[in-house]
Length: 172
Image (cartoon, rainbow, N blue to C red; front, top):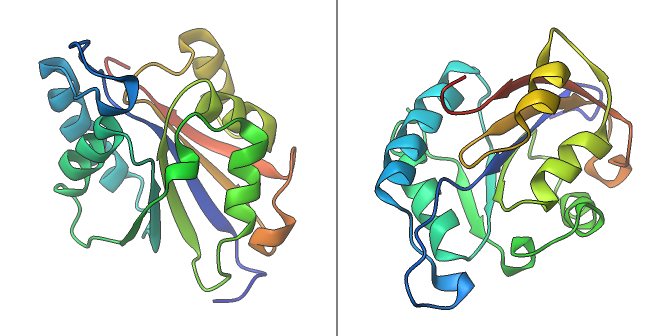
């Protein structure tokens, strides 16, 4: 793939988690989260972004979210379960994305707030449609995702270089 072609990044927050007596990393999805994760998967397919790579936090709730969402996909992208996504700041997520090989054109990152929402806000220097207004109004609830586009190598990904193309949240 050419670095001149626009790249897509989809930032996907895990679905609604339950609160059993386990450590935070091991929290599973709630019933509503399982339903919303599958719906988010259907909506991700509707974006028509052919994902090359998925970077997923190692937390139980993100792995379960991804398993239910990707089940809706016609083609499963290469998936890397990356512990650095768990509790990552926007800057740490940018550093991780900067390591992405340039042969990956479109990347889906499944993570946590506040990092995912912060990253969507920091990366998007421009917006199309009313996506920014909807994201500002709704925040980044569980199972929400933002679709961004930028040109260049993954090594050049930095604040303000992307365009926010779309945003979706359950009950949107």
